[in-house]
Length: 459
Image (cartoon, rainbow, N blue to C red; front, side, top):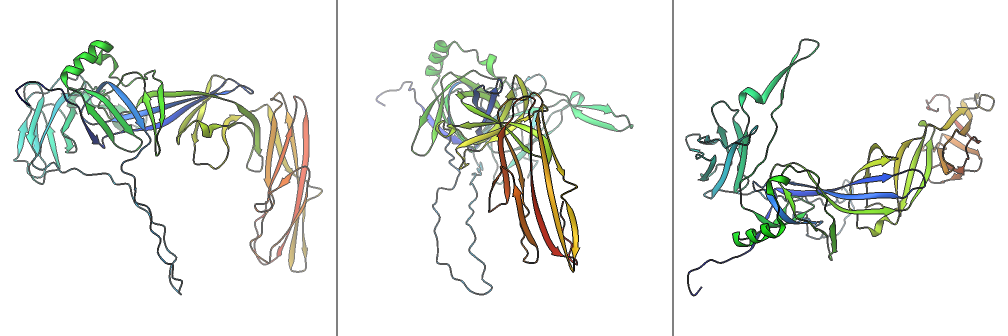
């Protein structure tokens, strides 16, 4: 610099105290309707700094994942020599040593958000090293060598153990009078539970941009005060109005990199430092779905409605939990596994009680006979499927032949009407369509021959 003056500057840094994970809401208005897939992100951060009105970027990169390619060595085979084990390298999460560094923070009342003035902060290894908060509840001190945590105490409040894992730490204390309540149960037992709400109204620097990766880190850009004021005037954003972590309606621009995907949220977003999940919308997809009925009556005499979705691999989806909604009703959870080698995603939408299926042993065609020192077990299974008002869509029913893994146990596969047999697994698959009021019947049979002195458990 040629002369003294003010300079605006930007800087970036990485923290492991923030992360995000994808999740989905999948909705269908009924059989034959397309599926609406709403991709969202759950953003969490506990950095000690509120993110207010920031440009948020969600990235699939994980900086703590192993980047070292594996090395294969010669494999020597000998007696009593185990086979080479698969190399497993854990994700590296850095641990920070704050010895000699100055950390800052504040202590507040968890029920009101009010600062706690002159709260005592005692180092855990040496309680004689202690500090106090100022009149506004803030504090700063140089971390003594070897200290990794401290305890905050305040008259009338429960003490709080705190790990030293960030340069700015906000702590909330619960008043002893309201933090715990007693509940009397019917058998006279007394339970205690917390009723105090957690409020977060952080005081800290303001950020302009946050890039979250799918692991446990965030790259953050802090902007100088002059730029912050200009942006606040431009957006007209009320910081206090969006620090509750409620759903924010944002649509992201997807940017595909060589080794990662980035979802750039198009509207400013706020995330308080409360270690809670905050929802942000990424994209909404409408996809064609094929609907089927699935049944495995040997295990469960219920018929499940299933949606089969193709073309999903073009959407840059990530592994994540999905909430399922059908015909306006929440029906449960599923999981989207994009690592699947199948070209369709399958989602069970629940039982359709209008479809009735039964599987019964044929008394006339089933018997067990003793011939010499061997038993011969013969069985025929009868299936009946009736459509009492369900949709006229494909129905898939599965069963299986037993497979012997002992040379002394002989299995003879019999007839299987209109089914497709998987020779490797012995699984039988029937596929057909029934209209309302229609009944479908079929059967299959097999024989098992085994020694009488050895127990064989057959259905």
